[in-house]
Length: 349
Image 1: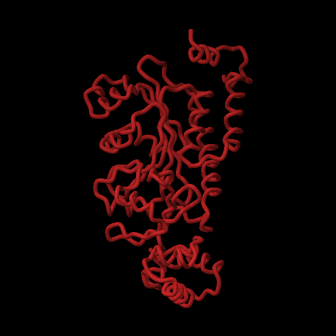
Image 2: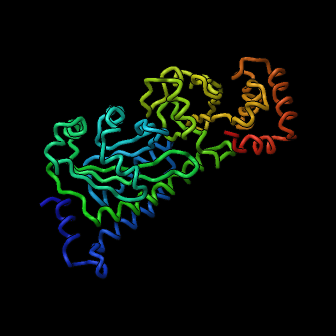
């Protein structure tokens, strides 16, 4: 008997149970250690590394063979859900792109999306006909036999955050205790992850998550809000998420800069410590300011100097100052604090 099977047997034995709830004391102790550890994970160079360590630690509570987590964009209407940011353990790099092609058919994933906060479980071997479907073939390729997922609404982002864990064909299924533990763990995980993102973020706009994204300097997405995701979907028809589109990733070596994906509004790209931030400009101020004035105001509010603003916009420092002076006048502000406050106001839709 291996350690995993022993852990499963212990959970269902009478020894060490807490009251009549059927949870082994040792399982609760491991759960407590992992939850407390979320706030103590060393400062990682990226939010992706933070989530990787956090999810990997949950295997000490509920064992699994592979895991997948990230953010899902659910467009309006009948358009299928799309994974825009993800991380994984034990899965191949193409996993998310493969799932995007079958997302409309994935009953398990759509069940999790429709039951936010609940642990949804499924065994892909329960119905023999499943093996003949695109979803069945997908699960066969990745040895996904038993799955459990929790999906949550990430506040203010317009996106859903999920964690999904899997066991292979040779393993046993997830039970009700596993489901209870995972629901609680993912709630704690999402709360701590948001706190981690707030600590990383340095633009003073921490309430505006829907028009914001973070990536590594290689273009790997670590967080993305709904508006940025929708803009990239509009501007890049074949974009599969997880990484910034190729030409945009190439621009990261020249930050700060600004770009316009498709017909969408302007996105300002800025250094953010070891990471890169992408900020969607407010619609409210797009009409109040000329495009260059808005770019200059956004860059300056996020910490760029006059010279950096000028370099990003391809103008002289004197011209950059003119753009900023005009922006101050149009917005009715007199200092950087007031400028930040004006730019953080929600835009008119």
